Image 1 (cartoon, rainbow over the protein chains, first blue to last red):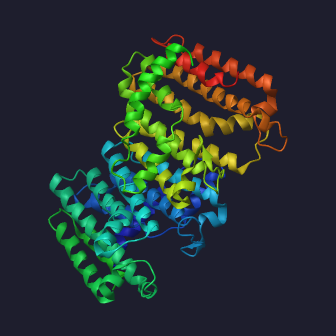
Image 2 (cartoon, helix red, strand yellow):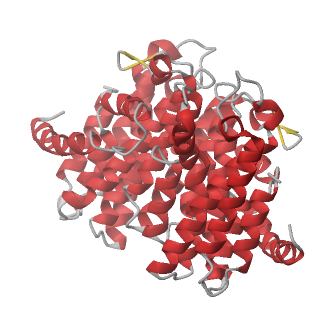
Length: 271
Length: 271
């Protein structure tokens, strides 16, 4: 993360974390503590940062993007809680801490995910456009659809792999940027530029993940990945190309600098 | 169900079922078929009927209530899919058919529930008031909060039992009536009347369930219930009182007849 981006992120994350600490305050006691646990497990908060940066890129005050930014992080968090369940990826640890179902039990983990997803929509309730954008990105034709393809397996070839990732991780990253643009009052042309940026960053994000897991995916029996299909060097080249594509897409916006730096940051894990 | 209510329901259910058959049309193939399965398992569609009846009770055209009615049924359906999971109630059969996780596997059943819940919000997206109403009724301070209390156990006494049911089943039934009133343009006084009606019907619904399960709950080791706390006769008397309370609440609305008949129908199972 370059110094300018680090300084910008630090300020925005203080607001995001403070607001995240207050979500679901009215949930039933006991459940409320369980809800807080995955939220507090942290993470890079990439989706909120993309949302805030997109709003600022069209010269809007990022404050308007705080509520959609929270909604995006709640949807992302719920998806991790459900993905970690024994019936799904069966992960016992995330970011160095035991997963929700390990600490609170499987039934509570299912309910924690359900409550976080439900709460997300309260944070975008004021805007019909944002409710639709979030529902489509998160639902059966978006993130959940991608997760379905992932658990079903049989992903054959680069087009099928790209389709899976466009849904599983790409849809919500794309929506993060678009939702920031929408609350920032982006013009149709600006929103189109942000959409192209979001799609390129979404794919770069996934390729970077695959490069990081390169040792693991060298196993022929493992899941399909860009590294297996393109090789490590080919995957890196593709990630680099996507970052340039993302930067070019937003080049004409009033204030594209933070978005450009975020695209670099997302893909940098691959280099 | 009396003849007038039966005739009214028949007409409304044709529209509701036709619209339900079209939901999630853009979901990923495979997942889409799995989503359709619990929707087509049917049920009485009490929540959609309450929503449509509430809109009509304030002299509005029920057509305006169709979208929120669908949203309510999607939330109800998702909650059944997740409640039936092995980690929750572990039910293998519902309405005479194998449950979603039995047919499609546990991972897909989790995703089906997630996708149905997400889709519900698209159907109320146009109204910030409805998005908030649905999110609060369905979330950690509503239905999911009640389900949490239920799986945690330790429900001690009638006040705790009422609190559990107010959240687990009452919140969504109450919201069904309120959402119909809201889209029907109910005045503040009318919405207050509909709210009282919805709360009474929600409790009557649960008591009727307990009376139906009376043989089961006669077992001292079973879960807490109104029958155990009040006796079968006491529970019936309470259900009767609640139906009268519900009818009285809406007595001054322009067209309360269908709501009154629905309250009778909901509680009739107890008699």
